[in-house]
Each structure stands twice: as structure tokens, then as C-alpha cells.
Amino acid sequence: MRHRMYYLLPNLPSARRAMQELLLARIEERHIHFLARRDTPMDGLHEASVLQKTDLVHGAYVGLVLGAILGAVAGSLFSPLVPSETNWHLVLVIGATAFGSLFGAWVGSMVGCAVPNSQLRGLESRIDDGMILLMIDVPKNAAENVAHSLGAHRSEALVTNPRLRMPH
Image (cartoon, rainbow, N blue to C red; front, top):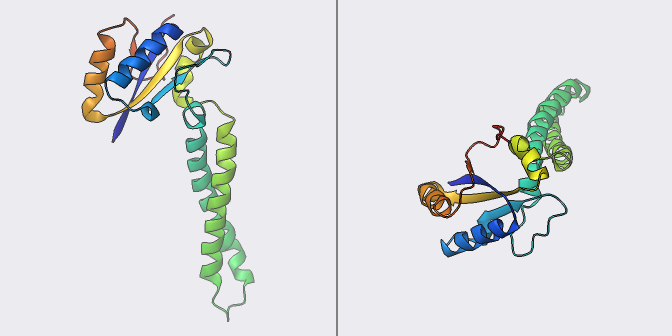
């Protein structure tokens, strides 16, 4: 199980130093993500992907659940239209539920791609002001060591809950 840690870094040189420190601490590059304004050059940094920048996963999950519920309801409503001699009522309900789940997950993920990550809502203004957000996925037992090694070399604040608004 991995734990996501958040750091706000003031500038690019600080972000590059943090990247080097994490690589030296044997954190794989695929577990290090940086998020900055669109006009910020991210040379030498592992930029956050669509999964970290948007609500794609959350949107897909909500769409899957709502689609399954609506599919089951629709299948139940249309099952009386199936002739009773064929016994296809259950197949219709299960099929409609499966179709609703898949369609809902697809639509939800499309909507989620267009929405910024809701977990980072409290940090958007800081990122827009030019700060760089560092997201690190580390094993739970290594989180304290990583926090200590990064905290020992810099004065940036560790953000444990990004939904909390940071003071300006």
C-alpha cells in the first residue's frame, strides 16, 4: 500500500533538487509527480499525468455506480415486455446493468478528464502563483524517512491534506 505525500516547492531549481534527492533515496521516477502552471518548463522533472491532474478515476467510479443502478432499474422496467415463456427476464436485467455500468464508467471518465483533481482544490491558487506541487507515492513504512530526508534540506512545507487551504 502506497501513501501519497505532497510538497509545495517555490521554484524550478528547488523542484529539480527535490527530484535528485528522491532519486538518490531510491524512489522510482514513476512514483514522483510534479504539477505546475501550464507555462512552466518541466525539463528534468516527471510531470504529473492525467490521472494525477484530473478527476478521471473518481468520475469513472461514480459513473460506474450510477450506470449500474440506472441499468438495473431500466432492465427491471423493461423485463415485463419480454415474453414470460422465454425466461429471459434475469438476462435482460443483468445485461442492462452491465451495459449501464460500462457506459456510465465511460461517460464519467470523460467528464472527469475535464475536471481538475478535487483533492488538490486547496492548492490551485498556490500553483497558479508559480509554486510547484510535488506528489510522491511511497510505501507507508518509508513515508517518515522520505519526509525526513526532504525536510532536512529545505524549508518547504509538507502538505499532508491538500484540501486544507495553505496560508498565503
